[in-house]
Length: 45
Image (cartoon, rainbow, N blue to C red; front, side):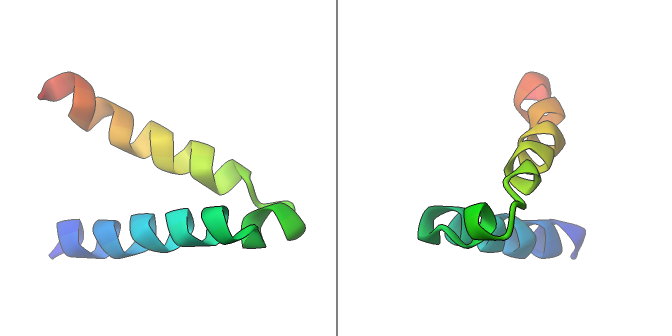
């Protein structure tokens, strides 16, 4: 269940990033937070 929630949040952040919404609101740091959250799983796999 948490994986589904994480994927929904991650996809939402990426869509907002590519539409420019995050840049206009000065929230680009959310993309970096998402990258840090994914990083341990990439190393583990």
